[in-house]
Image 1 (cartoon, helix red, strand yellow):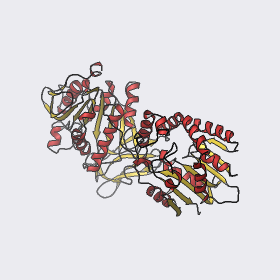
Image 2 (cartoon, helix red, strand yellow):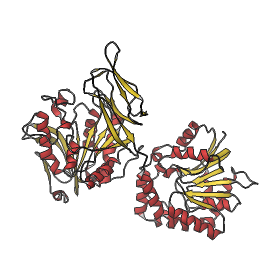
Image 3 (spheres, rainbow, N blue to C red):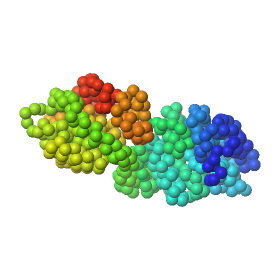
Image 4 (cartoon, rainbow, N blue to C red):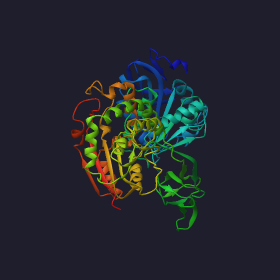
Length: 569
């Protein structure tokens, strides 16, 4: 939309006008003034695109409405590049009469009638007005929903898939910013507001969070954080994305099961539960307890939402579930690309570190735990350019180093050859080790767990490949509390200076996509290992003071910890 590529002197929409750098609140008058919708326009002083954030298409879904209200107040106007339009309640008549999510006069579902009909019923006219007067003015669309007064749901996000290939791709990228377990590609082009917006060339998503006609402050805050992360991703909001817990998995083949008979509904599962093919998910019974209908899973999957009230309507929804696609985590690709770019500087730094006092200090610290007097089979997981691998190999141990970044593995082999040490280096995912059970006496790792998307799974893998009585030494830090973009207190020769500000900002951006960054460490690690049955462990919080005695090129400004655990069973 060429008219939005440049910031205008002012932004005008349906009777509301905002000057650059201005936040205004008021009523959008659409449909010739028939509908007056509470809205805010945040017009940034910087040029950029326009994002529509809308809620209350279903007037009884309150989480999205409250999140929209809070966004209008809390987004900082000085950080906006472009314009943000927030429509807080689209189906205002039903909302203000507390009449649920259907049209007040026509009982129609607004999210089933787009693009609408300007001569039709109430909801059809409202859809037509939004289609004709609002959609042409925006570049992106975020639709905020939750479960209706009878719906229990697990948080998830839809993205528009029935649209131009590029529009669908951008919609998916928007969905990937949402902190929910699952995302669903929509394969319809009309009916829903966001679906139809995408058919017009507007990348669009719909966020689902909350249910049963209720809302909480935390749910509203979570949706608000999701929207802010999307705005940062789109470049419309100048900030750093917030930490997140989930990276949504694809859910496909969604089955929407409606009841063939009205009656009393008895679900056997909860929203978010995993299901197995052939499993009974619920029953519809009459007042005497006779079974009228049985809901059965057609395949393995997850329940996205279901009716949670006692009654179910004939032809009304019972539940919806879908098949989880084999996990594909784009974060890992980004992590690999990032560390690949840093492999050359890592090689130089580790080469120097091997011939510095640091090498002896590391050996001294590991020697407190690693048994002496015999050759051990040791795994250096996430070996980088092979510092620990080579260091322990020089002590006569049989050491294997693994890393997911090809450039790191290549350079670790190069460095081992330079040092004249016989080590094995393998390209391998730390979260999915290709080793048999009980193979290693010791596993060592340095500065790895903070980079992993699924740390708990990684710990399980490491325990699996340890022998009984085997030892895990994890040297890491609570890097989630540090800002890698801040290099002011580091010596001039430090790697964080030499790699450049852009690289450190990228590292910070990746870090905020990883759940481990939001945990309190090492407390989280201890709790996690305890759940796995490892009770013989210790924490050393003084490791940094003994290793990093000088503020030189090797200096780590974030205090490290050593987690030592023993596999007893």
